[in-house]
Length: 142
Image 1 (cartoon, rainbow, N blue to C red):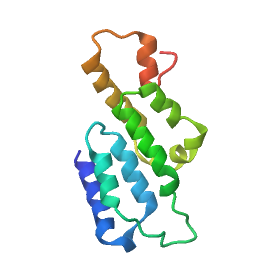
Image 2 (image 1 turned 135 degrees about the vertical axis):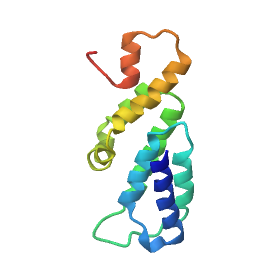
Image 3 (image 1 turned 60 degrees about the vertical axis):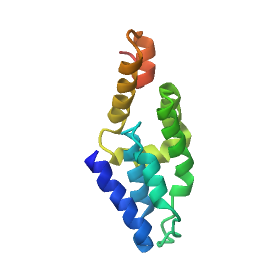
């Protein structure tokens, strides 16, 4: 949680110093904030972004407008405990850029998402089948 707090402060810095805006850092912060659902970190980061400046470096395009709807949808699926749908979207071809360029930089991202799922499962189920559990955790052949 302390790491997320530091990342939120970085987003706040962008709010008050728009020339420091770096879309890759913002996407990494949003990816990391997914790992602590149901805490409100994701929404806090979105709110701190406010009005984004245009990308300062025109040679490197701003990926945030392209990825923000998908990140928001992933967040919503986690909040709704729709874990198989989360994994389906996350592993889809449409989010290949997100996986290859951003979630790989978030060490243990998939395991952190599994931890989110396990916490929800523990508070919901007293008994769960192996197939259902493996679909929630995106594990096959277990």
